[in-house]
Image (cartoon, rainbow over all chains, first blue to last red; front, side, top):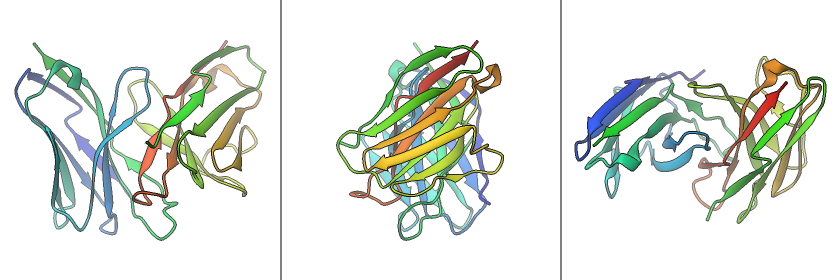
Length: 115
Length: 117
């Protein structure tokens, strides 16, 4: 089955700096890669996703890059703000018709943005 | 759009009792919902996939008789933890797949904190 590794487990940055979180996956057939933000005591919130036919996607301060050959994808947050502090999870999925396949999650990254 | 709700948000029960958790898709019809369990400072662990009108598919190691899942309508799935014990204390989160967008996109509910005394 799919295995997703995520690094680093914790990340501290100064407000205004950039933060990068990296994930690798094992199944070359995986074709959908979402990123979730989870605040303490809450459910994960989808912040950005990318499909395997795209190398990069950007949404304001957040961007995701995908390298299919190397089987890794990264989350980039620019101009970090204190409200970006949370746990971030990457995930991978091998989607087929019907979309009932499972997400495999990374182990999470605790991001702390310091003033 | 794509809002998923859960009820209750927090529940405390005595050992041996059963607890039902509801998961609703508020603005879309979800043919497939997923139930996850999350321990403190850990990642999400998929427990089962719930398909409307059919039996749930459980992940290896998850007791189907202990974690009963019912997906009776396109907007509601329920998870019942039967004969709960302290080791069942955890954060339970559901997600739903919105068929209107990418068929693989899952939206998560806010979670239910279960504490078994």
